[in-house]
Length: 332
Image (cartoon, rainbow, N blue to C red; front, side, top):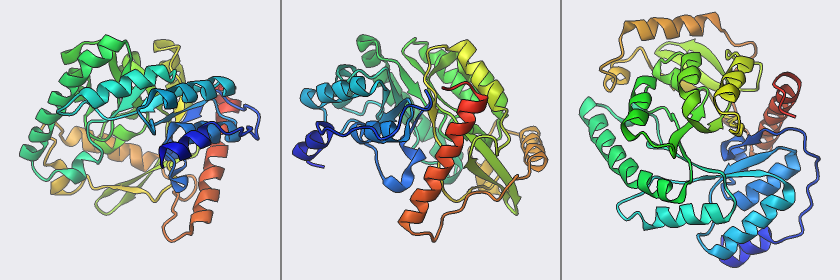
């Protein structure tokens, strides 16, 4: 999108079509068929749907864009969190991102170490260790910058770090400005207990990806899907209460990804290659969890559907989450 185009969109007199229905916001992946990532587009969608805020990326690192973004955010009365990357070899672009995020009125940043999934991306322990060394270099470049600007950054548990590894990472850097973007479902894929993940990471939470999860066995392990609130295995009331008690000011951002189920091949050799500290206890516990929580309805599947059908299904799934959040989780 060109500078003129996105500033025109941001400065338009778009009027929210729906009243605020929930203080819960969303991440871009709640609407994957719309292919929106830019914060200014997501703010308008947020107002249209009637949600409380969003995570999104900066479409420009110019001050004019950031000021317009802040103005629109404040007009709509929404929260804004910025998705970004960790600092690279030249940290100047990351520093400019932090500076413009503050200018735009963002309350926090969200980043990941690994964009994929550990058990799919790496085939050997040596490959994983090399990636970890690079992650630490980038985190070490990132932390002084967020500390200097007093901008909290949540590092998501993104199907990369096990719970123990993530806790060790937080202890290593020990910064009040480096915390967690707490995803309430991702670590099931690493054979962690989801409630233990919430309990132990909640005190470090900067921002969130809240979701319910559905599971189902298949020949090489289990299928894992985001499902509408109330359809999955998580005790959502307890999840939200734990986060609220630990971090009362944290925003809840829905990540209801409408897609085909992910395969977690935990019964294959390749899966275990990068988990030297995992053992049969983790596998047995997780398979018991899967078998005790057979899907209440078929797991979402959208492969083969046209774009408009995907949009309808994802909007319906988000709507169901909003209603559940209002009626059962106090997010009004």
